[in-house]
Image 1 (cartoon, rainbow, N blue to C red):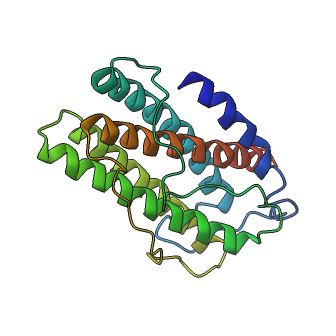
Image 2 (cartoon, rainbow, N blue to C red; image 1 turned 90 degrees about the horizontal axis):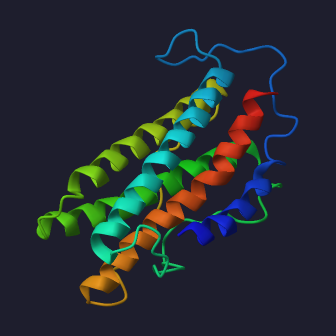
Length: 205
């Protein structure tokens, strides 16, 4: 798992070019239920939450790998899971409204995968049901903040549009399913890296 983080770190530069030139010279108060907030306030919250989600996801992965596969650093998980969101290397040309829409839709898709994992854990009487449920709630709250940012910036608010559906694990063995669940967690952890880098930069603009 640790060596996969080195691969993930290569993603951090891909979003530095995003949002360039889009910062607001004068803070605009958000016309949302959160009276008095600015778009920069929301971006700061997004960055903070992305860091928290990375920590919680990493801890959950380690606990899951130890409990199911006997090694907290187990890295033989399933890669390239169909339907699982991934960031492109070519994001520099994406306009801000489109990018926010994409992020929100991908977060909806990640929730679908974690919901599928939670259902499997419930059937098997697993102790990870609560941990996955907590992650689902955190991701939903994270997604909602991007929707608030859309409102702050005067964009149409993105609701559930994605047609991505969780794909079952490629094997019926218990170990195979555990490796699939670990792969979903790893992909979400990778997905968070460029988001937190970009929004950290945005809060400093």
